[in-house]
Length: 332
Image (cartoon, rainbow, N blue to C red; front, side, top):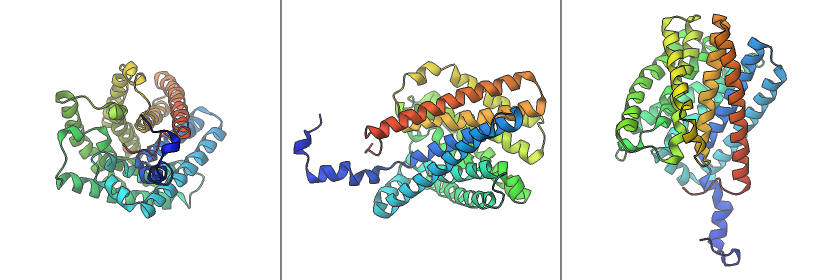
């Protein structure tokens, strides 16, 4: 039960206002992943299906502004509350959302690649370098840990390592091919390793807590992004590309068949985990449509774009409502 406002102590008032910055969640960078993914999907819809380019451009500016805002806010947290950032880095779950910072920059480099050919390569280069550092830090933490348990394993663990698969999508035009193959190899091999660990935890241990349940959608991202990266590297949809795509399609169907479970969950910031995986699958389906010419993929891509747009709009509305009511930047 909350104390009356008149009895609030100065310390409590500070925690409610100035101290809120200390609880600014690094997981908010997942909103950039969702917005940038939606942007790329609409740009793809323009190039393949003739949708108005203005929608993609508007979303691109919005995603870029959101990224800069979050970067400034988390930078302020680092300067004013370094101990809170240190606690984030040591947390078994929050640690895995730091790479969302570099992934957001990589996705924005893809979105800007065609219209900002001088800036996008720098965004990509910085994003790739920072993401490699996050990967090394995360894996070192896992290897030399003193506090992890199997119950800490969840799909968010994919973000640091499997995020490397995103690098080749734009990397094939910005850098020598071997650099892209380097990142692709890291992401692909360790996706299989982490997939085994996460499925073991899901099959044989207690269910994920409600706050982390939306992260199950992250299972869709590695094969769908892997498909896009592999096609970018090889220039064709061969047998292996189809394995990646249809694995992603099956996981999408699996999670869609459990939609009622997700609808019943209360809103958490982790719900943004729905957005980027759906965006990746939407973009992959547009790519399949363009390369195969089959009506099935064309219809599926437009259906997924509609679902993705609705999901991101709903998440944005719920996030703004939660921020308005002071339900974000609170201690867990």
